[in-house]
Image 1 (tube, rainbow, N blue to C red):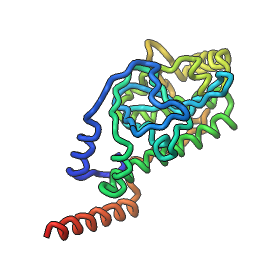
Image 2: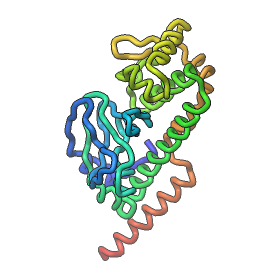
Image 3: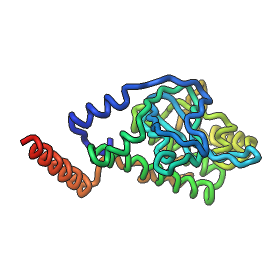
Image 4: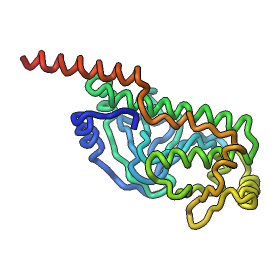
Length: 251
């Protein structure tokens, strides 16, 4: 949670996300060069963002997990620059992009939370660039597994250092910039080293400390869950000022 929300903000959030629908795997939620007035929130399941080249090769940008927004960039840029596709059965909430934009005026703390979410995605993309550009295959794979562990732990989807792992070797290859053969060899090496086990659609990280050493992993890009004190004070001041204006108008 980025910051504590008021009852009024929680009521808006509950109402805004009340419209939900369930979609099947491989459902395209955002299409490149499309224009949409909708924003999605993933409530359950997995999805992923990717960009494709004309010859069909693709690069997975990141994975979308419960609580993440989808489609913000398409709305604010005026056009989508990437694809978002569901990886599993998924439940999504559909919001009006215009209602989301109005948050900056009506609910500044909610708007700040969305901005924080976008900033965290930017931080993860920066890590992904380093992962692809400077880490070897073993380091890339360990780093991604640890990042997913930390992200899923934040939404209570980790059990005893294990989590659901619906990512195929082909999708893992498209994420890590490797061939499927190289991914297979890397997973086998991690298993032989006694660090990772994948079984029954779940992954078990058996030695997190050693994986962190291999990947030179730092979770600071996704570890912050609370508002910095100065930002919290600014948000409280804005809310107090807005409440005073509302009372003055009533009088």
